[in-house]
Image (cartoon, rainbow, N blue to C red; front, side):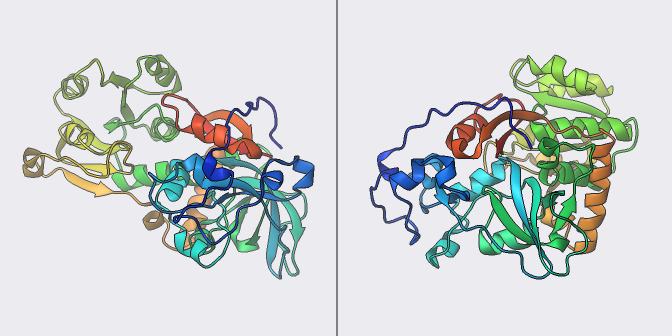
Length: 381
């Protein structure tokens, strides 16, 4: 179980958390201040719940959340109860809060707990369970149920069917296991879809991100060269040490000119873009005729700028959604086995950032949204 190197809390509750009412609030009644700020031993089971929904202007992400008491679940037949130990803060988690994804769940009077990913230890085994035993480290797969019931990983205990959990090998740490699904699966999916030949160049934006670093590592393993766009000069040496072939600082260098120089006028074979907005136009201009640009994020905008010239060059523009990559249970199991093997071999080494106790989730979110923070911020217990 993770624990060392945690950061201290500095967040102070706002008026919305001390009792101010709001028309955007859910029917779920938030706990009293005494419940909220009591010692952990007085709250044996806890979760980070979203209690305000609606316009992001009405409530910030921090104000929309509270640490609340939860009931420890019981394992029914074929189920396991998992005591969560580590959970990453993914951008998708914050988008879930901002976009009020679970407002309908809350409108039914049900508690909404955030979190799509994490790892933990089996606390209880239900009747008929054969894959796991108490005390075994596991990764719960939340995708099949999270979107329906709004019961995520940012809590002490969750219950899942044994078929929706993966065992964690001894060589994989909790911090790595907690990041097993979204970024590693997406990195593999992007490279499989693009099928870049060995020795050719893959161009990527947001190369210093946790996802960008995994793409560098995986491309290196497959013999694919990478051109990596960053906005911070200090990341050049760091990414080179990680295996990046070329690094371009978009704040000081002309990206297209550098790509032409690096590739000897051939341009990149393909590209992946996490930024969107006007950046996609720059990226598309750096890809060969008939090449493909896959957009998998929208760090700058939900809109995309694209040149008619690149359409004429037949540069293809696609969107990547993880659910499309793993549409069936068989596909999920296949990708899971591939990724776990890559993690065991240390081919992919997820970038680990600061760790915060679950109760200090607000400070953790502030750190997760800090530009240039480095590794993935983790919530531990």
